[in-house]
Length: 227
Image 1 (cartoon, rainbow, N blue to C red):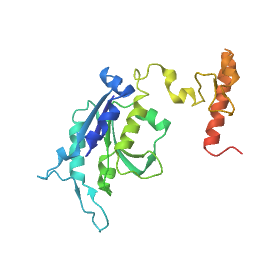
Image 2: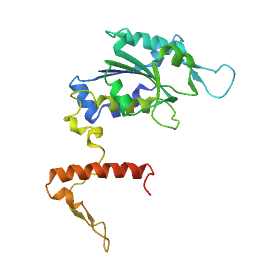
Image 3: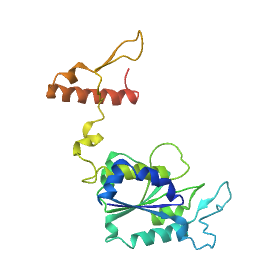
Image 4: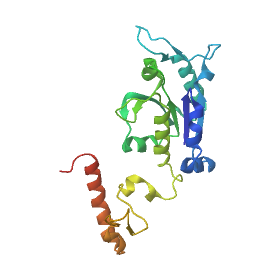
C-alpha cells in the first residue's frame, strides 16, 4: 500500500508518521508513505501555489496547476490507475467511516491532496480528485490532520500492519477495558473504583457477552441515546 501526500507542509508529518505502528509498518515495507511538497510543482519562480479568488472574497485559493502536475507525476509511478485513488480533503466531502476505510484499504495507492488557505480551486474536485472526504462536521486549517487520520485508519486494515487481527477496534467493538489494580482508591474517604466482577472469573463466554452488551451501552450513552 502506497500513500502519497501532496501538501505545502510536509514537515508537519514527520513526528507522527515516525512513531509506533506506522513506523514499524514502513520499516517492514508493508506500507510506503511519501510526502510531496506542492511547491515543487509550481511553475512560479517564487514557488507560489495560490492566488486570489475570482469574484472576490477573503483569503487565497490553492491553484489547480501545481496540484494537477503533482498528481500526474505521482500517478506516473503507478502500475494501474484503477488501483489508485485520488482524494481531496474538504469540509463538504463524504464523512470518513469504517466502511469507507475498508474500501480504501483495497487500493494499492492513495494520493491525498491537502487543502489550505481559503480553499482549493474547484476544478481539482471536479477533474483531478476521485472523491472528496471529510473527517467531521467542523473546519480545520488544512488537510494535513485529516491525511494523518486516514493513513492510520486505512493502514490498520492492511495485512501485517497490526500484530493481530483482533487488535482492530471494529472487531473488539470498543468495549470497556480494565487493567491492574483490581480495586483503585482515588483518594481518602472516597469510594473504591472496582473492575467488573465478570472479568475476574475466567468465564470466557460470560465475558464475551458482557463485552458485547457493554460496548452497545457505551456507544448509545456517548451518542446521547440513553434515557
